[in-house]
Image (cartoon, rainbow, N blue to C red; front, side):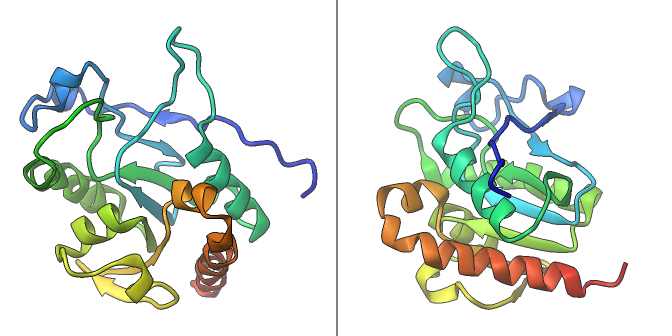
Length: 192
C-alpha cells in the first residue's frame, strides 16, 4: 500500500439530455456538468456536495485535495477504485453566490435518477451539505450521525466528514478512517 498514488478517476459521461441543463442556474457559473466519477457499476456510492475542480485553469486534469484525501482513505481501508463511485448533490462546481437551498432541491432530482439506475449497495455521504440534502433534513449533521448505518430512501447509508474538513482539521483524520473502515467492513459482509 505504500506505493499508492492518487489519480484522476474516469468521469462518467453526463446523459445527453442533461448536458445543457440550466434548471438550477449553475450553468451561468461557467462550469461544466460532472455526472460522477469512478466505477459507475460500483457497489459503494460516495455522495459529495459538488464536483469541485477536476482541471486547472489551462484545462489540464489534476487530483484536487478532496480527491487525494478521499482516495488515500479508501486505499488505507483496503477498498479499490472499482469498489466506489462518486457523485454529487449539485453536478456543477459553483463559482459565486447562489441560492443553495433551491439549487440543491432542484439538483436532487438528478441524484434520484442515478440511484434508480445504479442501485448501490451502500452509500456514504461526505460533509454536512451532502448529509442534509440526502437525508432531506437540515437539522442533521455528520457529527451526530457518523459511526452508524441509517436507512435513507431505501439505501443503507452512513456519513463521514468532508475530505476538505480533514485537510483543514487533521485531528478529524482518525474519525474519517474509522468511518471508511465501517464502510469496508460492511462491504465485505455483503453477499457476493
